[in-house]
Image (tube, rainbow, N blue to C red):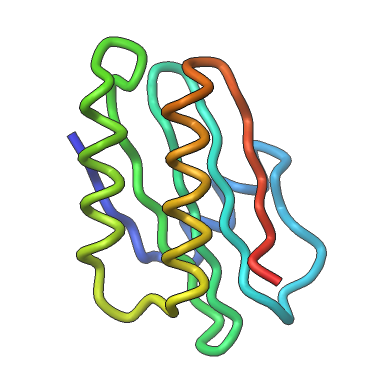
Length: 108
């Protein structure tokens, strides 16, 4: 199952609790990581100062969860091309590498 959150406060607090806050809010960021049995993909777009967070549930039990996440990101309206490409590349690398990997990619 894929869930999407756009509440900036909720996402920022989640990142802070996970100790994954980035120091530069002047450029776009794409962050992906596993937490428990879920995979989180978090995008920050500097031009509108907004976060978007996707959560793919059960990625360790089902490889199709990450494929569904890829599709959800591609269909999401309002993402810049560079952010969409960075997210796709990050998820492809995650699928290839298997469980337990942590990725961080800065779009700039």
